[in-house]
Length: 526
Ligand code: MSP
Image 1: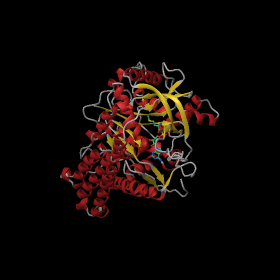
Image 2 (image 1 turned 120 degrees about the horizontal axis):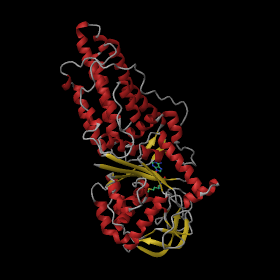
Image 3 (image 1 turned 90 degrees about the horizontal axis):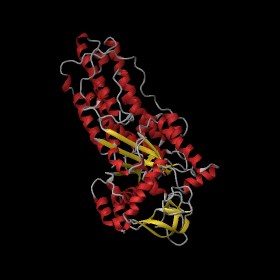
Image 4 (image 1 turned 60 degrees about the vertical axis):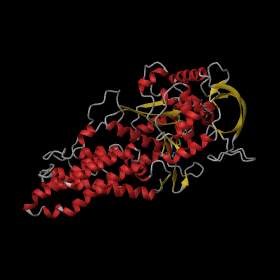
């Protein structure tokens, strides 16, 4: 079984912000989840490097467009490396292989009779790289998202005959599971019901784009080119640029994760383009919400943008991932609040999870010769054993539906149950009674084993904390990062094999405990 998923290909007009980091972290967790289950995963990310917006950013920076793109896409790559993102592919739309794919794709679309010449008149937002059909009211030629003036365009363009795909797209968007979450379906259904209109796929006199073969002076509209990046990304080094190879390389994708603002491109334009080229459609498009900060839209003019570099430096990947995945319902808008961020990280990760492991392992070392204590006779139907198994099932179900919040909540409840158990049993008192020694051993075993489960189940969400916890229990690390090559998956993954109660071996030495999660103390705004 193979699983292909993508982030959007990020514009290189500027460096990454928290919005793109959010999408990328979410995709990273999904990719890790599927790899942990033993599936072959191709996790695609990359940069969208053509178009007027990029051309103007380069001019403003005093660089050639290529030099500008090299610098910003290099910064993206470097940032994802430091965040520990496990992508398998990083596609740049300025890659020559991509250009060849675009040309081939266009040839198919043209041969299908889906390209016509027509006149484009309308108001264009360069920041969105989109015509704004809705804002035709007299005197209000401003982008509702960017609040910047729209630009008038009046030129001959090539158009894609989207209107021919009306009924197919209607059926597609109405089908269960294609657009997720369900709440986003209505908006697209309404748009389609309004009647699909052909859309312009070329620009005249825009040098920073891929030239349209056979149509001198035209370059491809940046969105036509960018969406095809999902296809080029699948080709391996040395592969010829051949659309027919894609089926063997993981197309169609199982999942495109995007922000809600670009749902229409992915749920309407993109499938129609694929139908025209005779290629299969992606299974699902998930449109997540937008992040705000302390209730306000993040923006440069407000000076409240959260810089992922600063967040990583000051807080670390585990803390930020936990907050974003545990607190924001995936699909809804979310608000970044510094106090809540600190509270959740400190309560959940440092106290409930980190301290649990730390104090239990200290007690075990002190009273049981530095090793995992004997498990005792009735270990398998221990209440914590049952809880671990049900939590594992809950995490699987939650991550299958991309409900990170429910997965995190289930893991946290498990750790809370183990804390409650420890407090009820009070082994620090019981150990003073010699006859209780066996019971104390069994109790500590159960809690340590639960900690191992917590670490395992955290692996897709917080791979670093998970690895530190497993190391603290002297357990093997889990394979979870990007697949080196695509070897056939083993019959049972290491993750699945580890998810059995009792895998922690009694008598196994326990390493010296060190805190697995430091408290977050932020004395100034991020
Ligand atoms: N280049 C296009 C995508 C082409 S995909 C073939 C693009 N790039 S983008 O860099 O502008 O946006 C990337 C993603 O970031 C979008 O999905 C957008 O919704 C998301 N976000 C931008 N600001 C955001 C927030 N404040 N919060 C969450 N996501 C946000 O669009």
